Length: 111
Image (cartoon, rainbow, N blue to C red; front, side, top):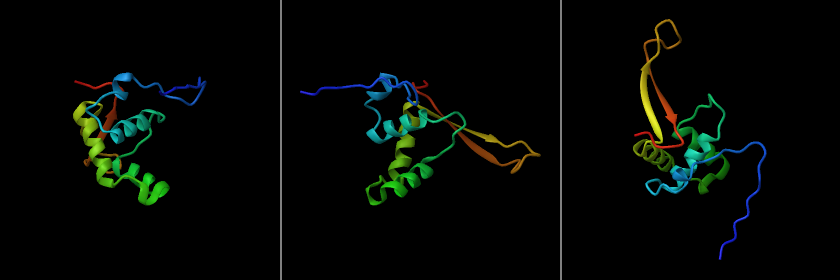
């Protein structure tokens, strides 16, 4: 028997759709990475390598591999929770003319 006790947070929490929590297409790591990204403030930026670096810094040899984080990002994109758009930086801005990849995460799959 499992007893679940929940607190009633008043601040610093994120609501997650059950569809995401129980989406069997995603590995546990992919779900946790998505939840972590959805809990961040608007404008926060990261990528798979940065998340791995943070995990490695805090957990050392117990951290998931860099490859596992890249695979999690791929799962999220394939399932529609992450979209990737490559755009050109306008000329006249720093690095103008270069391309940048913009990742957007969603709490429900985009079809």
